[in-house]
Image (tube, rainbow over all chains, first blue to last red; front, side, top):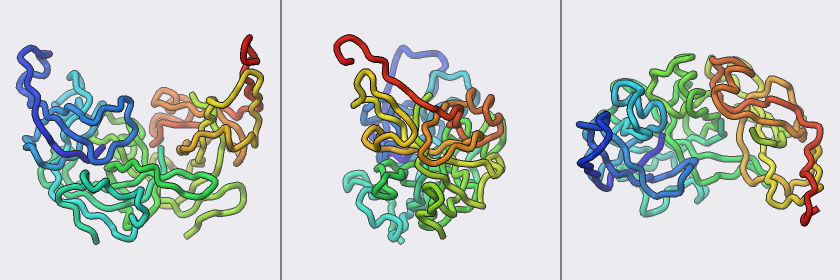
Amino acid sequence: MILGRVIGQCWAARQSPRLDGNKLLLVRPLAWYDPDHQADHLVCVDPLGAEVGQDVVVCMGLPARLALGDARHPVEAAIAAIVDGVEVYQDACREPAFCFAHDRQPESMQER
Amino acid sequence: MIRGRVLGEVWATRKAPRLAGKKMLLVAETCMLPQGEQPTGRVIVAMDLLDAGRGDEVVVAFGSGARNAEVPGSRDVLVDASVVQIIDGTSTGSTPLISS
Amino acid sequence: MKLCRVVGTVWGARQSDGLNGRRVVEVRPLGLGGATGGTRFLADCDDAHLAAVSMLAVDPLGADTGQLVLVGVGSRVRDLVVGPEVTTKACVIAIVDEALVEPTNGNG
């Protein structure tokens, strides 16, 4: 799963019937892992009702399809949780490479 | 699987029902190079069933391996990364590099 | 499948049931970028041939540090090699004696 921020929404008039009724959100990853494609955004289905500006946890692959109820959806990323808080242990991230880029810090990040 | 270091925790009250009650950790991926343990710059959110804590080094599994940590053989688990081991030590050959 | 070299082992008592005491090795994939036709990879090959990343794999074969191994990634491989309940997608499936980049016209 990855941490990302909702930056917008997508609408489509013609789409797979299995996507009908689902909101498609544009998410910018705050910390990206293992990209098969180097794009700086993800389009995620949103079963939870996240809003633009919120930080979210996105899950990928089979679990993302399951987020809509069953595995038969043409989906590879789904919002799994809307983040209330992120707590980062100060002593565990002294090395700069462990830190978030300054423009990609989770909104509710607290250091402890 | 990857090796990682626990960076922090993520809290959420609004989440998919299948995630209820699960602890989510922020884990920084590291790798072992000749110059020692190096962060790769990737940070992921992993489900934690082992109660890993501050600064722990952990093994994180992805995909079906991560689902197996919760319910073996299940496809019906909303998790794509899980902590599957808390590292006590590592070695190269017979010489331990790190032990705690 | 990836050709890798074992660079260490990892252990820890607190582990998920699916791991069940299995040996976990840290491996670095071979980067074949610098290899020319006729390059021979053996155990303890030059560090320069290794990619600057490492990953972990479950090792049912007992490979030693320094050995070249073949690592299979995916749930199908995992199901066949170590069992469907194991919490990994990467397993050591062979200990490699030698790998050779075939010489071809032009770069041999």
